[in-house]
Structure formats: structure tokens, C-alpha cells
Length: 321
Image (cartoon, rainbow, N blue to C red; front, side, top):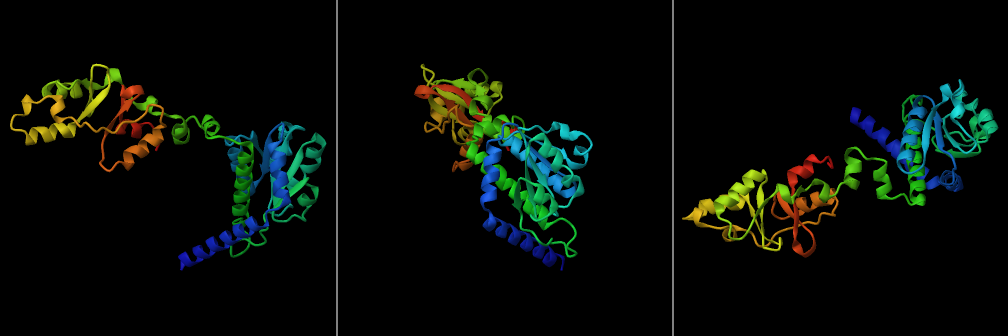
């Protein structure tokens, strides 16, 4: 069955990664030290399937604090080697170690003065003998039944490249804030940068009432603000209660004289609040973990003074998920 064949491929590749993890040695440590101390950039280089891994690695390194770019091997031998300087490290990818386009690069790179790190499954190959440092993936056979299509070898290259990138990032002390700086758009950056203060409705745009506000005026305030609840405040702008749409509906269904009520008669006095400094993604977790699902949450500052209203629908629209 197809699934059995697929399962075998996954098991073979997983076993190769397990073996690779056990065989990491001094060359891996040396590669991390070189990349950590590089004055220029880490230039990844490859062609074909290995080239795809090299390009991805350049992106991973760049986004985790190590300036990097991708050099296509076939273009490199026709002039693009001009982007390499003596301050750079060139990380080359070839499983066989005999890829002609890559092997021909080593003399020129040495002449430029850049260091070379080779990722290969054949450390004794031509490229292996020319490289300054070799990272051996240890792959001797592909998961392809004909041992032809790059499968296990590219999986190992990708995993080893990720291990290298993350190890350098960890040694560099690369922070969440720095990561966010390189990912200002999309969910990644927003999850790390966006705070409640960036998403909340400010006090001028929310429904604010006092304890003695008549119920119809509470409804008007909520409707005019276009929100789902009203904050009940004292004379010092401190939060003393909260009236939601649900509170209003329950009041009108259960009360014999619903129009005679004031905000204090139906407001919730125990109110879940949130700080404006909290990350938006953390605020979303607060909403999700509440035993009773709500759609709005008052944002308070010092002395429980109201500073805004956080609405669940605004959080979801912010792009953090």
C-alpha cells in the first residue's frame, strides 16, 4: 500500500536525522564559532535541490541575527563571485561533493580570502578536500527506491542547517524583540510587537456611564459607541462595574419594570480587566482561558482607572493569528 511505502520513507529519514544528531562533533562547534564571529556575511551556495536548501538557510540565518545571502553556484562561476569578500564565510551544499559548479568555486574563494564550510554526505570527495571545514550529514543512501532522487540527503541538510542557525542564534543571545524587528509584517512580527494599547478602543470611543445612569441611556451609550458593553465609572474615572449586551438582555427578560433600572442594578461588580502593556497575543490567551466566554474586557491603568476597552473581534482582526 502507498501509505506503507510513505511510512518507510519517513522512518528512514527520521533514522538518518537521529544518527546525524548523535554524530555532531567538533566540526559543528567550529562552524558555529566561525559564523558567530564573521565580520561580513554567511553566503550560502548550491545548485539544484541542494541550492534550495542553501537559499532557505540564508533566509533563516538572516532572520535570526546573522547577515546572510544566497549565491547560485552556476551564476557564481559567471561573475556573481564578486559579491564575496574576505570577511565572509561561504557555506556550500553538495551531497556528492563532486558537483562541478561548486568544486570550481573553491580556488577563487580561497583567492578572495573567504573561509569555506562544506555540507556534504561525502567528506572524502573533491569538495571535501578543498573546503576549510566539512559538516558531514552521514547520509549514504537516499529514501528513493532507486537511490537517485535527493530525499534523505536534502532532509539531513535542511535539519543540520536549522541546527546550525539556531545554535548561532542561541550563542548570539538573539532576543524575541530582535526577531520581531526583522519580521515587522505578518503574524510573526505582530505576535511579538503588538500590545493591548495598539489594539484597544481608547476611552473617547467607548461607552462610559456612571452607576446612576438610567438603563436606556446605558443602551444608547453602547449603541452610539458601536461596542458590546459599557464601563461603569466613579467620579475619579475608576472602574466600578461593567454592563454587557448580555446583561441588558437578561435584565429585560427577567425584570417586571426594566426601564426603571439604573446601571448599578444590572452591572457586574467583579470584572476581568487587562493591562495596556500586555502583548496582544497574551491578551488573546486571557480571553481564551476564561471560564465564561466574553467579547470585551476593560483596560485599566494605575488605581484601576479606565484607559480603554479591548474587544475580542479587534484582537482577531489585528493579524496575530
